[in-house]
Image 1 (tube, rainbow over the protein chains, first blue to last red):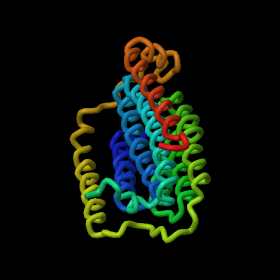
Image 2: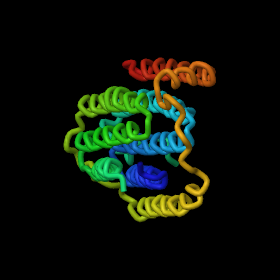
Image 3: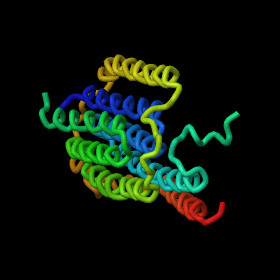
Image 4: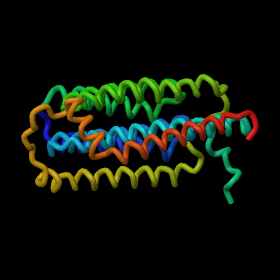
Length: 100
Length: 165
């Protein structure tokens, strides 16, 4: 059984990859997937602590994160489709209507 | 060193790097699928079989299929979509700050691990019946709130999908 710092390290690396992807890419769909990557890293951290503290509450929390992620993706992709109808692109630099 | 953890950790990190560097959205989605599967394998290792199954059914089964569906639906032509954003110095500064935060977190884990010792797992840890007990007793209110959230998301996505908005 790997010690908990390995799980924390893996979780941090995945979160960092998600953050870097979110900040540098310009395809809106890939931004969504970066967010999913970050959410997954948090799930891994919660499950690891749940196991090492022998407390099931962490696993229940993971399930709530699943629900929030599902809601986020459903609404986010619907917004993306709406934007695509207007602007004909998924390039986030073209979504500048609300920018000053 | 735990070979099981190592295999799936390398798989997850490699697929994660592929996810954020792939040029098109579809290969990126397949990389994300690999991350999900690798994490599900790690959940099994952490005595969380129910979470692993939900990971496969909800993430790989529902969310990723929705993402792939949208990729197919939009069918972005090979437009002049550059891979990265224009003002890269700022972006890379942000990315480096994110990496710096990770390094700080990794240093922080040294003190965390002194606090967390492996506690003895109770009988039936991770079993669905134990999970259900906790889920429908202690977290009942949270469960109801989550169901309302999903209902609101459902209504919102139907509204957004209308012809004119």
